[in-house]
Length: 478
Image (cartoon, rainbow, N blue to C red; front, side):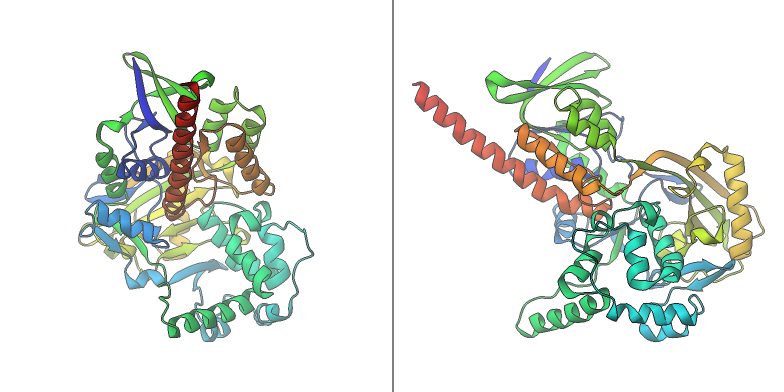
C-alpha cells in the first residue's frame, strides 16, 4: 500500500512527537512511524503497588515557553505539577556521608564538602584567564583550569554523572555545556559572567523588558507519559506504531523521498517531500548508510552510556533520615556501587502511597558500563548496601522494579561538534532529509521540545520553497 504525506517522521519519542505536533497544527500532512508498539521513546511511566515509576526521564525543566504552549494547547494545565520546595536541596556524598550542596556564597564558605584550599581555589576563578584560542577542552580540563581539581571531583564529576551518566574527562565542554563556555568567551570567566549577566537582566527589567523566570522542574500528576500520550492522541491516525522502517530512498524525478516500512500485514511505502529522522544516532546511521556513508560514520561515532534504573519503594518508618531534597549524587572518587539516587516521592506528589517513600537509583553509566551485565539480584544487593551506608536503611524494599537501558544517553564526547557539522552537511547535500533527536542540540526533555519548533520551521521553509520551485517548473513546462 502506498501513502502520501508532506512530512514523514521516523520515531515517536518526545522529539518526533513534538515536531509532528507543530506540522499538524500548521495544517501540513504528517505521518509518524514508530518501531515500538507505544509512543514516547524513553519516556515511560507505569504503576506498581500504588507507586508511580518513571523508566526514563523523571522530570523536565521549564526552560522554554514552548513547553507551556504545548501544555496549554493539549489542555494539560490541571495535570502539570512542579517540584516541591524540598527538591531545591541537593546532596553530594563525601567520605561515605551526605553533604548538602551549598547554593549560596555564605553556605559555600561554611560547607565541609570542600576544603579551605579548594574554596580559595574556586574564589580565585575571578583571576583565571581565557583558554588559548582554538583549544577544545573536555569538561574536566575546563573545570580543573578554572575551578580546581577538588571542585571537579566533588561537584562537577557527580553532576555530569547525574545529567549525562557520563565522565567529565570524556565530554566536550563546548558541546555538552555550551552556556558554561559562553560565560568565559563573553565575559572572561564564570563568576564574571554570572555577575554581569545578573546586572544586564536587572537593567532590562528597569527598561520594561520582561526577564526570564528561573526554570522550574516539572512533571505531571500521572508522570511524564501524560505529555507524550497527549501528543500522540493529537496526531490521531497520523501516528503508526509497531512498524519497522526498512529504507529511505530518493525519488529524483519527483524531488521527494520514499520511506518503505514493514507491518504485520506486509510492506508499505509513503512518499514525502521531507523526512525527519527522530531516532537515536545509531539507528539513523543504519538508514542513511546507503545515502551518505560519511554521515552514517559520524552518527555511529556517537557513543551511548549504559544505565540501569532501579526503582524501590519503602515504608517511610524504615527510612531513618529526613528526605528533604532532590536526592544525592556520588563522586567517582567515593568508589561506590551506584551513580546516585533520586528521592522521588519528595520531589513530586502522587509518586508513593501514604506512609511510603520512593527512590529512583541509577547504576553504571560511562563510569561503570560493565554493571549492566550484572544480574538483577546482584544489582539490587549493591543498591541496598549503599542505601545502608548512606541513608541507614536496613529493611528490604516493599516494591522493586529494575529497567536496563543498554543505550541510554548519547555522550557528547570530543569531536561531537564536528559530528553535528557532518549532520548539517548531510542535510545540505540531501534536500528534504533532516536529523533530529537528543544526540543533537541537547539531551534533556526540555532541549528536545525547545529544538522541535525550529526544526519544524526549517522543514516548513524547505517545503514552501520546494512548492514554489515546483510551481515555477510547471509554468516553464507549459
